[in-house]
Image (cartoon, rainbow, N blue to C red; front, side):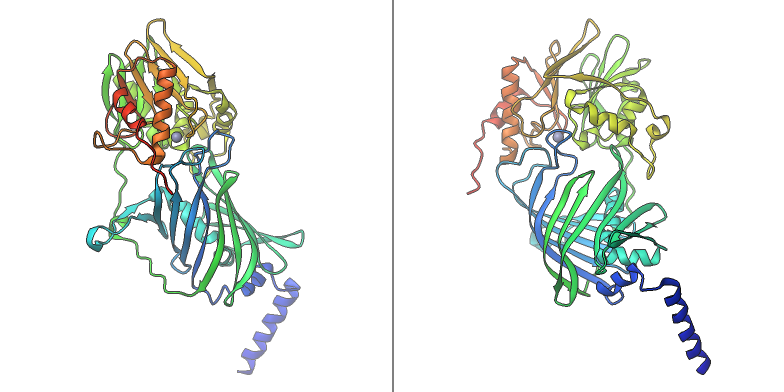
Length: 492
Ligand SMILES: [Zn+2]
């Protein structure tokens, strides 16, 4: 017994002598009660933002009001449930984002490497179905370790290195062997800032920076009352915390269908709209492939690298022995641009509105180390053909007109594609015909449909077929006109 005590005293002397004082990570662990907090619930309200949906490629992300924000975390399990109640009026703020109206509940979950969303309960209280969201797993896992308590826990288990910085300490380490995390702990042991990066198909290793300020005592738990997170440089979340509970019951089980989920193979289906003009569907975002004399023009390589590659491959299968020389990108929103690096790697000239030139130069060269794609090794320089309000691609026979939609709140750089001879109009986002013909649009979708209709009139386009880049069918100007005339419902 005596020997044991002697050894213990000796050890503490050595530690004190080596460090001189308590380490910043240990100070933070004590301040934030890291060793006693196993689960946490944080409640608040504020704003989240539609990342990748800015009005122009240099604007901030458009905001959505978050009436209620609740994050429930189980640190030992590496799991988190984020419940959001979002609100939208009859008119969306300038920029994109999936249109919705009224209140929208989102329930986002992560546990280890699994991510999923839960819908609302079904009729008669039937349990909601879990929707696997594997693409969100890295971001959500990093969100757990980016919380102040999570950051300190992860620093302690991942051999963090520390360096003095101003009045605080910079702390850095790697989680899951591949995700770099950096943070700053101030002299009071408060985590002030956390930076991490996850893969995004367009902008590559994307910086997520979370700033914590106005620490308060929430019933014995020291926690920031203001959380601001940026993604790719613009605010993505801004929450004012109203309550924090230590060690509530948090039970997050990975649903069986999430655990067993295998992403279905990518399907690109085609529909011939006219000789040499193909409507490429089969996913959430559609494209066009157009045959020219000695090359192919593709309109939109959406979603992600894999979809972009599949769309290009389908175009070459439908129109054999010709290269894809031009890829028109309808607008800069990330859901429609996700496969753009596949198009750059393909060697195609990117046809885009002139406001996107700088952004695409950056996209071609951005570091892609977390999930390297082909462009990361080929490093092809991007070739851009910039278009102003109107442009044209032609081989002398076929004409493809490009027109920028004016008075369109969704984005400033939307190019619709018009084939005057075939009387076909390709358009993303402005008008998605409801699955059921004749059903009316939700109020925030009406101004977009109206803008498209107004532009068709302004440009005197003679359209027989509208090929929308969302939805399950082509449509006509008659249907568009009807949808655009629906009076917007007042929210008051
Ligand atoms: Zn869009």
